Image (tube, rainbow, N blue to C red; front, side):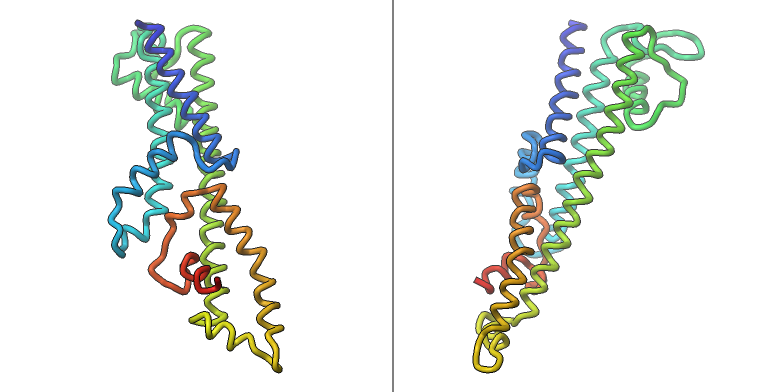
Length: 230
């Protein structure tokens, strides 16, 4: 039973790291855990306009990171839980109880601990070091996930604003592009938009959660502006 609990904990940790890697580094469109969770939350959000719908991207991003942290904490707690002398109270050398092992796993994962509990033996010391490394890795991957995604969301709205500046309707875009008896100026502006639009499309493939970063302002809404441009 002890071995089974440790194996389950290790599986949870490895599965979470795999999900983080696929979501943040591989640019494969999201890991199996985060993708399913985001789809489930997205389907349950109200479809009508409102502040909650406009904040969906931020909500899903926060939920994804919290899910990673919670699963890592759970996994490491299960690893340290079953063996009685895996974690000891530093002051007395007595085995830590259930609550103390949860506390030890969380403090080790998210900080370097306070020293009030310590691992006993070489194996548990090595596992504690791996727990610390996992915590640093999760923070790094979370930043790797958030920074480029938020940058891509801002870029998407900037491209939408560029298209909106060409005219409020398809007809206005054509009229505003007419200069000196031809549409050369319109062609130049369309050519300048090809690279930003292609970059936005690539970002959506890498970070599908970008679809949830919506806005109630038509002038900054990429779907509205792409339809108008088309």
